[in-house]
Length: 199
Image (cartoon, rainbow, N blue to C red; front, side, top):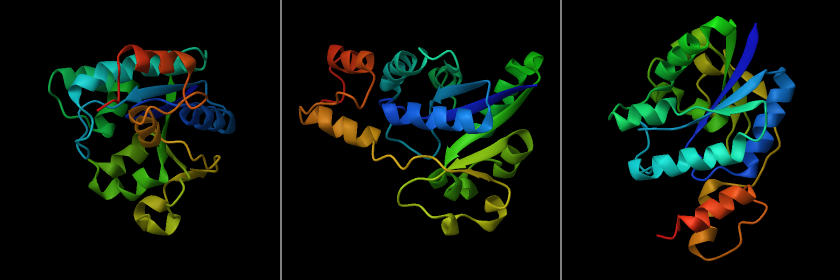
């Protein structure tokens, strides 16, 4: 049986913190691969423009696909192109069907901030039926803030507490500051080439 980790996010832009966390989880859980899924039309956030989706997908591929254990899927962005709002539970079902010949076990990798929001997600209980939910610690969020019904079902993984964020990187680009060593050099070049995050 193959063990696949699913790591979703806006990746706006992807940065070295994402790589460090994904590799840490991959090693802890002996995953065969981690599939990164840039978000499409997000039901709980409206800060990711559809125009930016292709750039986020391209940057994710530049950042993650150098590693043979990492893969990038456009499954959610493809739905967004059709105007479909994405829900994680639907993505997991689609991925399970896509990879069923591999006899996979799915590990949904989320931050504790996501787990706190689970009551707002579509069919959150079903996520635990079709995947093992792996929760990463995040600075500023406590397990006590998680609903008991979800806290009991989740598996917690201790990962480095990194002070690297896409929000900070976007701010640095806007301010004309260096993002060297925060993102892959090819991602940095891509941001400069397309003049991203200047506004």
